[in-house]
Length: 106
Length: 121
Picture 1 (cartoon, each protein chain N blue to C red):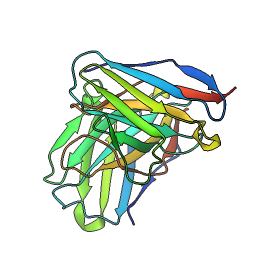
Picture 2 (cartoon, helix red, strand yellow):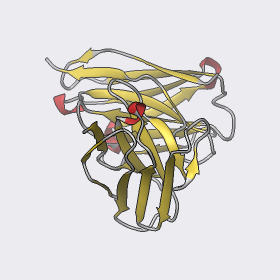
Picture 3 (cartoon, rainbow over the protein chains, first blue to last red):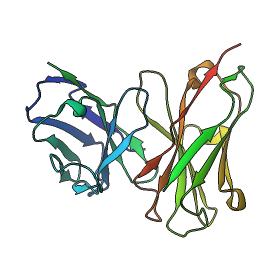
């Protein structure tokens, strides 16, 4: 199975900051990557699919990039509702998730 | 409006078999583009994909848990059922069902609210 490694595991940031989260696959996955946001006690929410495509209804401050083994999720200007945990997921079979990145208030 | 809702026991004993049901609405399990997966999350830990069923009834399972899992569906009832045998305390987790809408086992665009299952004697 393909292993997904996210970094950092946590980040402290302020409202308005630019935040970048990285995800590395143990082997090439082309652009078969998604990003999810999860708030405490809630189900994950799809933000980005196919590495850089924004899911309908997701604010444009979220963006994704990368291909092959290295991927990035960027939040251009952090908003109060963005404090959450973010997961990457590779979409080759079987799908696997990264360990998560918690975005905390600084 | 697409919704998924998990149901099942909140507490199971070690060695017992867990049976969870995902009831969906807003889409048909017979639609060629639709599939449903089960995904779990132990408290405070990351997500783990378990199993998937496609519209044509093809199934896919986690490599590490394949021997313990069975996924099935009843299209007429709009339900997907997961059974997991020989439950252990390490299987304590919130279990989610989630939809893929592309025809592939790819991205999960709709999720249920999740159901917490505790394994304890």
